Image (cartoon, rainbow, N blue to C red; front, side, top):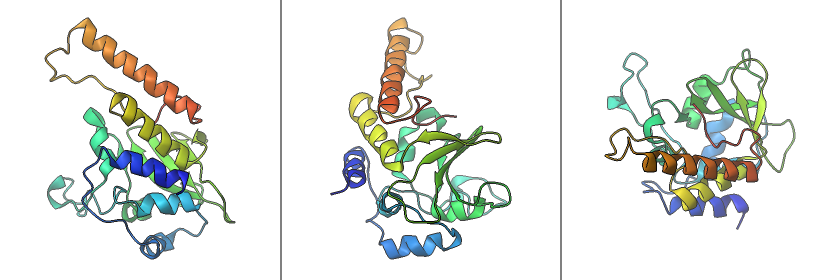
Length: 207
């Protein structure tokens, strides 16, 4: 069992997976628009039953969820940021892939309010696919590999039950110091986990 598969199995414990794993041949077909090599870990991620599939807004004229065909198990852990952070399916990544605007080796992976996370491709076969952040002009390393990012997600779920601790304004304890201290402690734990797996920013996701 690969390290990526083990990480995804750990994450799956906290998910309600609604689809079977996807054959690699189908992923290769969906990636036909991307003319660069990805590591096996990237294929493992997109084959996973919890990976993003479908389209959040199939109709560009109707930016609502009524016509959505989208599913991703990871989005359930985004809390109040689920409208700000979005794991892109390969169908959506194809629509956002812009070699004239971004480096053509960058596969769109996550969109968020201020920028993007990309999976870096290569002209030759590579062991790991780094995850990069781009907010303005120059990309920066987010995680040294997609596997490391999934390991950080798995450990955060096992430790604090979320990957993006945030204040729940509907929680009856929201205004108490005890509640605020709890969230701050969770944020510190997630930061330490992200750093452990190589995130220079000490964050798994950001908005």
